[in-house]
View 1: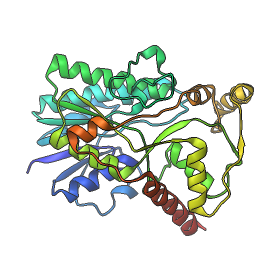
View 2: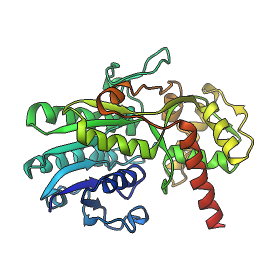
View 3: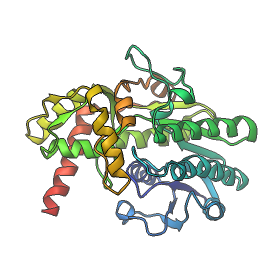
Length: 330
């Protein structure tokens, strides 16, 4: 039986993608790392095959016999002690996987990139797929890895006949954020009253299930070599936190911190991170906060029929999921 191979299904976005594909009647094979947390795929009617993006020898068996590939897996952290490990998974692993899929005769590939790989507008207005970007303008190891991986996918399409469509999710939130993601951690902390202060910036918020639907639409309707932003609504971080606090019945964090004076703290946090203490702020996150990550999904709407729900529903589902988890753990 022909199947769709999904990478990253044990994670936040990937688990939502797997559920959308199953609801459409597809047969799935899920690539999972040995020893990974598999709560997000428990009970799913899918075959599991072990492999790792950093181990190319495991990729050819995973794609063998697949009719399509949904490559959602990525190392997503805003702080990494070893940038090369992230590059190996996100860039080199993507190249090896897409080549293995092409060699196996996979006819359709959807690569999950990120808006982190796209350009931003200096005036804060929403960017789109054509907003200029260069490697020198990409801040942080994670964003650089996604930019380089996306550029490699575009090259594979042009030069090696890889049949890939690219989707660029903005900032998804919602259920099954078990790790949690950096954004999920902020939402959880605000919902639990654990965030007294924040550095304001701008984000585009979207329900994770809408991002998953966008992946399925890209599989069905996307044009090879094209990029599609899968976003929702633009918020300042202060507006987002206020909405999260209302949903949770909490007071929102009111202390808005300036970026400049936080640089010495960021340097100290980075030093502590080298001995195993997760940093609350780094110089890279401060630099990222200076630019509002506002985006538009008009192209995905026009070409794919992508239509996300109101962000208020995404906030409701994310807050509810984290609060239920906290109550169950108590």
